[in-house]
Image 1: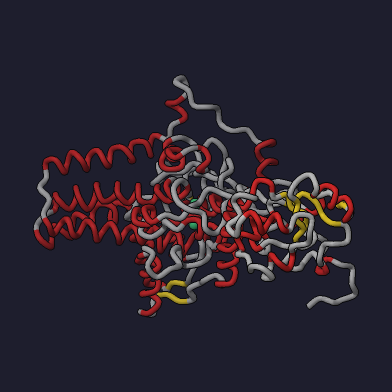
Image 2: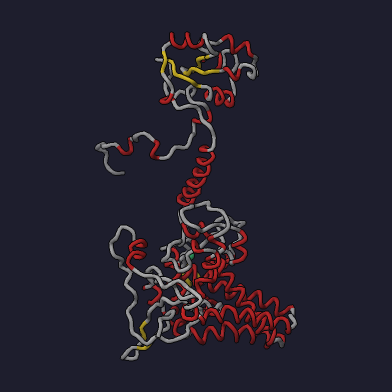
Length: 484
Ligand SMILES: [Zn+2]
Ligand SMILES: [Zn+2]
């Protein structure tokens, strides 16, 4: 029997052992008969684990017309197409009452929060501690979203974070939007997902309870409760089943799927751009606040996705309210200093890109160093002016000089440093920047100290340099200084 997402199985002495599975299912389709230990998470010591695994393991064969029957995950294919289809057909024949509509939205948020605040931020990332009552509520709510057990879901999600954008990531976004959205669920995994430690989850009584009773829980929370409440409340069992059951479930499914697809596809990367996760308000609205995914992948143990008060993150608000009610505690946040450092790095990166797109004055080391005599003889042939030790060719600027041609001509072959910096007129930063573009040489012995403001045009005083472009720093010297 093929492995599945981790249903418990009794061993010889009747007790239960748990194993995660490599075949993702929204709900289990079969019970495993083999007894296995939890997967070892000690990795071989290799230079790069991902490339090592790709080299040493084989993927499943490519899906073709000949093999697709055996390669599709039929249980998920049917679940993910039958539920929305039945919901749409049902909606066509069932009038929507306002009470049912309101309840469906509320139940969408309830079961959605089971995934976002429960499965994701509590269990997969341990962003906060939840009291036992909240744990059971979230475990039931999450079961109502029919996305596998906490254990199966969190195991895959930890792999996703650990191996983001690689073939060991179960919903690798680099394989395309639809693959990361729903495609990965529709087919048998092409490779075994990367290892992740879930020993903390296997110790949790609530996680084990939910795993053990998962079939019953998805039936009760996914379909019975959303039918029962509208039936008992306002006599609309059929509407409840169709709208709060089937259609609501499809919405919750695609809401979660958007975290794997949309959140890795549209938006900004204000904290890091090494991988695909992005921040976008549309994703946030589609996913109950999981849309600030660039932040989340950088700071996964932070209970927030959105760090600004006006950004849409109801999951964060929910956890915060739970804390106020005494249901949750130890809400984790990353150091603001480190968060801002990430933001600054990205801002510098963008500025560096702009910097690279602009033309800059010739570097001092690229300019010829000439004597005063050579300067004089060259200035007799073309209009050269000396400012701050740099010789400038102002041929193209003579008629454009705002102060008039005569002022420039007056200083040809002379040192105009004092005149440029206030003797005649205190030039603007723009004028200094422009002047530097006209550098053609350096006067031997005439350049002021390299860090003199007059030698460095304003636009270059805060120029961004890669660390490889920096000179040796005292921080790296072989001094005797001790550690701080
Ligand atoms: Zn992600
Ligand atoms: Zn996550």
